Image 1 (cartoon, rainbow, N blue to C red):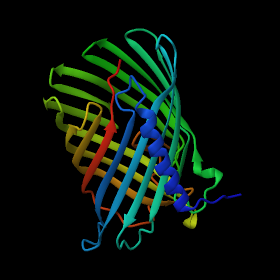
Image 2: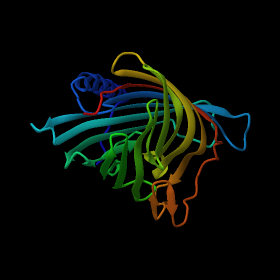
Image 3: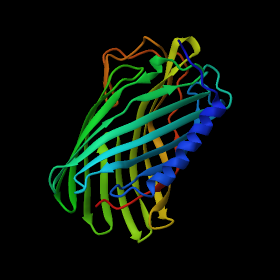
Image 4: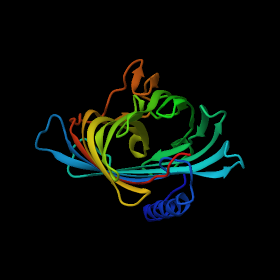
Length: 307
């Protein structure tokens, strides 16, 4: 049987989660980024209708903190939450999506087996829906495991594998990453093909650079037993400033080389997806194609040095 959420209650719970995240994260030690809040503006245009423009507003908040740490700091229980809301505004014939939401509780375990090797496992259940009528099938399950091997203080390699149920079909995760400091003011880090950042530090409180970011997720829609896929890969330039020793504000302007905002019938899916690559016959969108274009992102995060 479906159960219902009111949007005012949802907004209250999201705000409460963010406030709790802020208070909890000030006590979190050993994490590069314990809390992140962001807003992204996406000007959009239908491919076959140059005069028909609209926009998407994307709000995100995430938190991950140590719930328990062993006395020797080798083992840590991690807990957190990730929240997301997409709002589409403006005339968009053939594209009926208005608002979709994502909620992902996070629970995990981190184990530093040696000074060189660290292992982390995260369970990632998720609720992705337009929340018009939430049902058990809106909840998806997934998880990832990551190994980090540090060869020198300036270089570490990462391998992430995982699985996630998606409305467009099963998604397998395979990410190769690194964290490299080739020089005092330079840093390269990320997990390809999802994220990569090249950062330069001209002053103690300012960073500038280039980044690649990607997302590939989906939401169940009540209307017509459908789902909505949100896939985007963008290259951008960023500038960020530390407002204090822990709080950093970043502005990014980017261009989406891949942009997919598509509605599909519930049973029209990929056989499987590896990160962004679909396997088998592609599902058929029910809406007009949306052009690639620019994106603007503002982010505020609380950071602490990894010990």
